[in-house]
Image 1 (cartoon, helix red, strand yellow):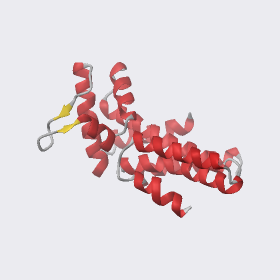
Image 2: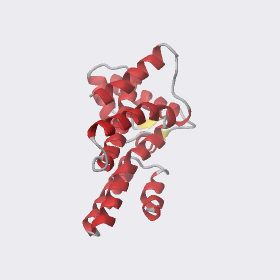
Image 3: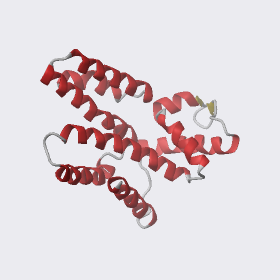
Length: 193
């Protein structure tokens, strides 16, 4: 819980005192998120078409390519609890960051004590919002520790079940976030390992 609240407090300070906002891909993703969020809040349904971009695009394309299927959950929950779309998007970012941190934890738990892992994970969590702030990179990086974990387990045991788990994980990742970054995770990263 402490690891979760530290970056949330960091966002509050950056947003309120330093007036920091999203940049690059994250700004574009947030714009789509906010549009779908507001549409859902007004009509209680997901828009079929988003018509503000060069003639428009299907929202399913935007959700799968620019956001993530998980964004629908945060749009619905945010509207149910009447949360500002900015903070609902922050919770979406925190979700992917927590996936990344849990992946780091399962990789480090046999190497270090829990206190050392807590310190390393807390530092990475606080600095990763600055270093890995691009939304698409954050989504991809949230899955990489899990891929590394199953590849490492395979080379320690040579059991094909570990490769099946890796394949299932990467297929889930592919369907949760259809983006060009997952080519790295699906093809190049396992080959490098």
